[in-house]
Length: 165
Image (cartoon, rainbow, N blue to C red; front, side, top):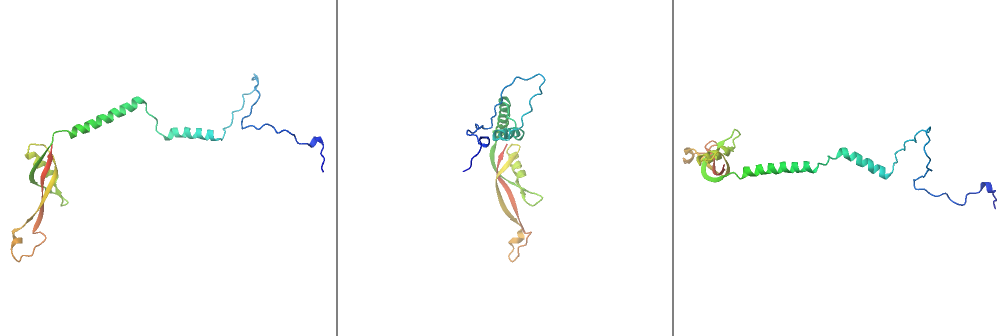
């Protein structure tokens, strides 16, 4: 057995546990006393969430006021209205047969053909809806025994239907 003197004994009651909150006695400030030191940042969860919100202000776009939002909606509605009015201009589908020009790359250019078809009906311009193609050959191709060459025939394209404005 070990016997200890009371001077070396452990206290029987544990000090109260505090959860990070320390209370200090309130003392009236003294006129000659310096101001209390600035409190250090607490690296806890709440502080980190606060920093996240502060950083998000610079990342996210600012919220618009209700007046600004209404102005944007009015502008969008006006733009949509202008687009719809362009679509509702009177147009007509016409039929006919106008040759398409050959573009520089060898492909048919039927925009000019559609315009000519619409202009023949009294409209300003048009867009082709249907086209037709036909092979046009030199009369020599029909001679018996003639071997067909690469330049004996060519394909011609025609606009047969167009929408006019």
